[in-house]
Length: 544
Image (cartoon, rainbow, N blue to C red; front, side, top):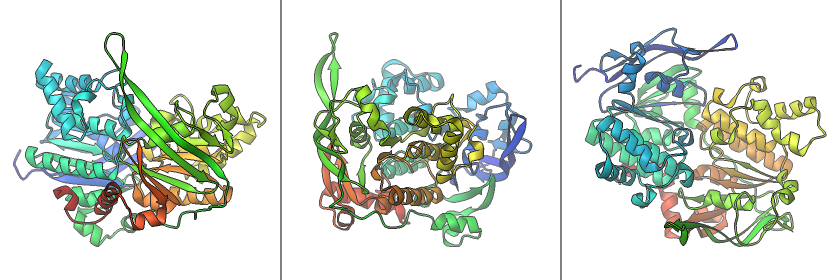
């Protein structure tokens, strides 16, 4: 292989899925290449074929239901599609590694962080014992895990969404691969950690001479990380070229629409006279730390530490902060899905001490959309069953036909074709699964909805559509939202009030317009500055 030759070259690649006697083309005659040390970004809306293209490189598609009617994939001159399973196994995890969009499905829930990373080092590097442990700590430190030694014994469920994604990046980089495939690696990360991860990947790329295929829907990140970009729509590459050229003079109409898409519009205005839907006073969620043979409590992780708030009817409270700051824990406490201390009042009634059965009448009026749609949607239920499950529980008087009418309406509201409602979650892209999760919450017409990163897995065009949809639903039904997000553009478009969290405490809170205009705390200013820099051109974040 000559130095001038591409490291990876994809020629005329097509991917077809066959199910129930019907074939669907997911990728249609795609061609591009990646040079050694180069980063190529693959962008496009959910379902455009980005991830399917990436999975084809490592032959990770569900064969034989998936097949390649055309195409070749050359890596260092070898056609990967022609390799046997034993041969491709030596390429995976060593020469080419991949970080998937949803870390929950990639990490083993029964193994600790140390064991999972050490396993990769043992298989490919022969490291074990103290040497492996030292390298695991180094990797966790490199990807921004605080106090990495203390996290060695943690299980995936004990980490925040952003921390799980960073562990996945550590796993992928453990063997210093020649090609690193990153499928939405910063989706679950707040803006400050996004900047750290981008800086880390650039540094590692420079040190290792590593090439990257970077799949993302965030065009701000594309400008920061990639030299060239391929824009996909409907399984085809509609435009490709140098990043600067594509951003400054896009030729295809879809590329222009993608560049123009971002959440817009004004959030619901504060309503000081509206009734309070949910309120707390000094709420706390402390997790005990137990050690020793007798498992004595030696301390506490203060995930939520003395927070007071009140959300009025028709308003949106935006909750922002770094991964692990306690945002999701606060939302779960308000919904009484985890134990907490301190009064919680919902629709004028104290619910803090209510048990499971007593809480059931309130569940119809309080709903949640979780950050990870794959983990929250049952793989054994069709989409119609997933969305309609709440109707069976809370509206048992509805017959099957009436339920189906409401399921169809909910799916149409979030942009999912109702004709696909007999399919299963694994048959949809990550963004489509998130829209299904939104439909499941909205079908019950609740009063209060906790939205935990509901747009994080969506491309920019769908993000804007979902924000418009949530705003429209809020206005039509007088809904009250708690919107948890690291995307400040989405918060600015939806939230009437903002609460900023750090290490379980409230750093700052107030009316959104005032807080965005004049943040008072250093932490809030740093958070906003990181978000602003990710949206602008140049190398500021990467160079820091």
